[in-house]
Amino acid sequence: MTMKALKAPLLIVMIGAGLMIQSIAAEAAQKRAYFAGGCFWCVESDFESVKGVSEVVSGYTGGKTASPTYKQVTKGGTGHYEAVEIRYNDSQISYDRLLFLFFRSVDPTDAGGQFCDRGESYRTAIFVTNAAEQAAAQKAKAEAEKELGRKIVTPILKAGRFYQAEGYHQDYYKSSEVVITRRGPKSKANAYKFYRKSCGRDKKVRRLWGGDAPFAS
Image 1 (cartoon, rainbow, N blue to C red):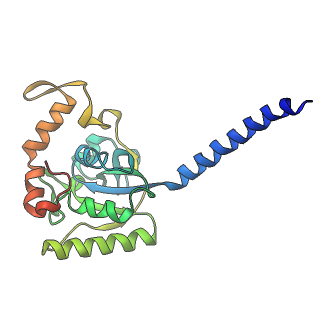
Image 2 (image 1 turned 120 degrees about the vertical axis):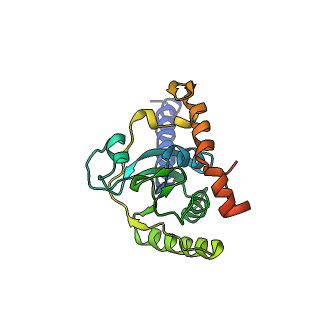
Image 3 (image 1 turned 30 degrees about the horizontal axis):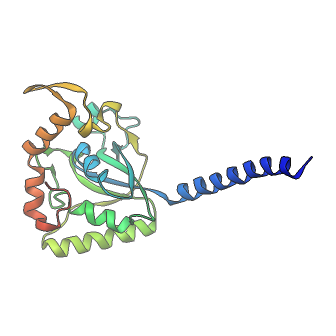
């Protein structure tokens, strides 16, 4: 076999090895954070705009009911929160930064829900997966409480199983699919905008956090 003939398969092997190394490195940098901040459509919309966040998945966690449905969770009794799984690259954004943004995107003084959404499934919470996240969350909570000058009731809980919400909830805020609302047919994106404004989320967050509110429009 000639040298030229040997070079071709060797090059293919080297390229394959390089791609594998890149894939392993990317997977190692990919982390996940779990927050509950009221309506998961809103939290998903907020955090998918953050550089370093690759995807936000809406779902349920914190309760005991296996494979819960949206109807079960919002009715109450499952113990689950509406929550999100934030998939992020920690070489681009840190867990500390995500915590900072989270606290200033919600009303962490409200123990009964968020904005117009009331009930246990709409409460705020941070779900941690290890001791480092626990310490970081406690520090972020103390700093946010000091800045706000009010008691923060958002609990820091040990993460349990995260259940992905039904498909129609994912990327609701940017979907062109038409749904029937009390104000007639609207795209999901427009229905979401109307809901968010009517619920007063941004108005309340701006009142609480002022210029530190990262997502309030």
